[in-house]
Image (cartoon, rainbow, N blue to C red; front, side, top):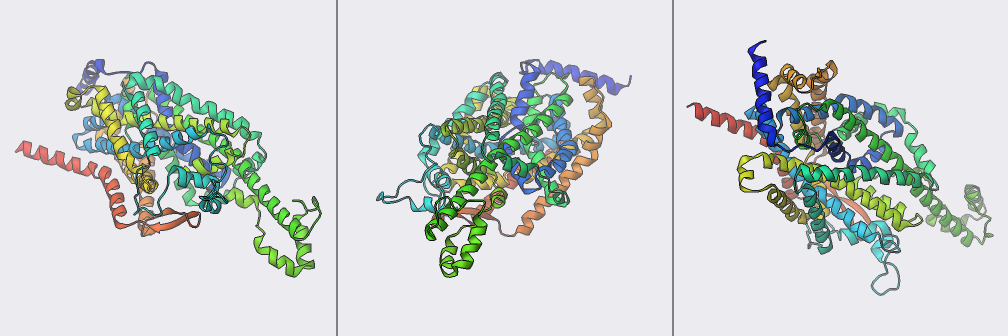
Length: 603
């Protein structure tokens, strides 16, 4: 055998000796569950159904599954393999491959920190809604009375009771991002509670997270199954399911459908954040991470499709309810205006009677016509909503019309909270692992203190999102803190493994660790297909930002009862630039710093 093999064998012996003190998962199931809990998050519940609705219903599954095979599974396996081979967090793992790549791990750490700052705000809102779900009636089911109690609140009447509760009672939102307003103490308390829960979950690293994931990974599925059974029994559920599963084949020719499928796969698996590398670093070196990568990918995508079925059954109920309510209002209006006999006008003969009234009583019908709403089930189903709008407005609209609405509300928001907490535990691990791996930090502070400081700093910064303009800043972080950064990070990761460390060398390392040879599929995806896809996505997002011109946001107009589009002010644009640069610039700057340091050392 050549000297290279002996050096590699010695390396593994040294690695195993060094890692004897490193914490490990209690069993492989804990590792699998934390990966599932991290990957399966709120995006599966509120973004995937929106994409199905926008891009052809059932036909969207074609690009989605293809992107899972050529992008999702290979990149997930790559990160798990790197973490398991290097046995360190994101910073240490990439530094081991090359000192010039330390910036990749730092960039991942920065992205995870930025994501955790705003992501836990969603859990804050879930806690707020969960507390209010025990009231009877639900506080978002009816509009409140105005100041002199002579009618309903004007803003609520112009919008809806669910929109009013979200924008006014939950956010107390300001008219624009320039008007920051005050911190909302109720939201601040809920945010503090949310961070306290996260701290208790990540307090002792793998010891605590390994136990928590049994709960955060399994409970959402129990609630989804309960909701599926309830959803399928709701009136109009079939309308939503037919709408979802009816394929629009022409959408397969739409490049945006493929781009959004690739994006959904990429971000839902949590690639580039360092979490997957951190999880795998606590594995036994002999663990079959290839099998786990395939299982996690399939579970993540299956959950997205399953939650889509649940969402569309409820969406169909809501659309049918609104459609029939609209018809009843039109019938009541025409019956009273033309003194028709009660029960004569029905949904089946409405159009026929309208034509008769218009021809027989043209002058009177023209007076009534402006008040007649155009009722359409198709238009109700076509209303595409994602993100917080789907979770806190559309779902609550449906829940308030269900029987025993308090029970369904508690279940729904408890599920949202566990999904959010599962992702937060993973993100917290991604931050803590490189920090606790650092000898400088861990020599001065115990693990519990490091966890506490991370949560405290995040909570303090997160108070920004509890202000009256907080939701606008939340959208900025959500849209710009991670998108371009993660694409760049994962691109550099694949190039680093295949062309810096060497694909053949990495292949032999994996075979020595797990005893399994790397087949042609993984090598082809890592070396060529996945990097080309990432470059394509990166170019698309970059050109989209450039072609968009002045970046805009949706502001709530209380006088009109709906959102309006406004331009971001210059300082908000500066913050957006800073968010993108804070992580992406770590890669070239650290590489440059390492080069200069080595250059002066040689001298």
